Image 1 (cartoon, one colour):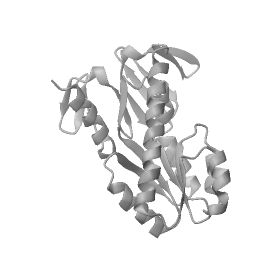
Image 2: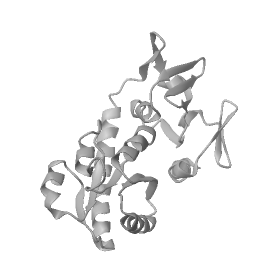
Image 3: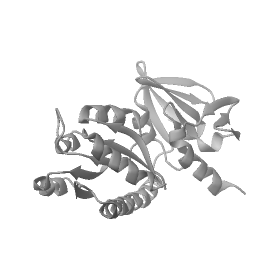
Image 4: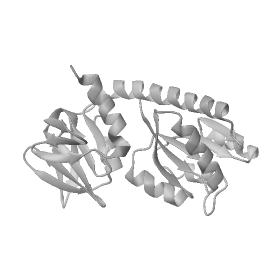
Length: 237
């Protein structure tokens, strides 16, 4: 299980310490580092993030205020020099509340709690997906188009739009890659690049750091390589 992390802190030294700790844990992948909540919000619109390391006292918007702006809650570990906000943090259901300077042992304890919570969510999601529809509707121009999941080959992000490429059509819709991924069954689709989501059962071949789907080579970016090849190794004979 690979967990995509976002680090949000305006103190360079604190950010360096967190990076060092995270690099010792192969299952944690740093998607981005941000100095304030507005940068973080922009990353969350583009990337799939499961775990947030979040400072409280930052310019423009505090970490706790930022958490309350999120449409979809993200598992969050607070990293701060201010213990007086702990009660508020736990009211927002944070994973843990770490006081700077943060020791590596205390950091590991918080990460283990995050792993347990995310694993429990993964199990709950698998039960939920058994009851999901096998199609979705997407808005394209002035129509709602029904798209069967089995027909999707891959999805390409194009700024504020995504292009859904199926076996018989290409559909442009105004939607983020993150939102699109949330609408898809996770067992059948995987993001392999900032700009690409693929249907796993449509892969014809893996060629180096690319996949071939319908004679189209699609790159696997470094951010997603570990998670993708972990899946491939599980299904190899």
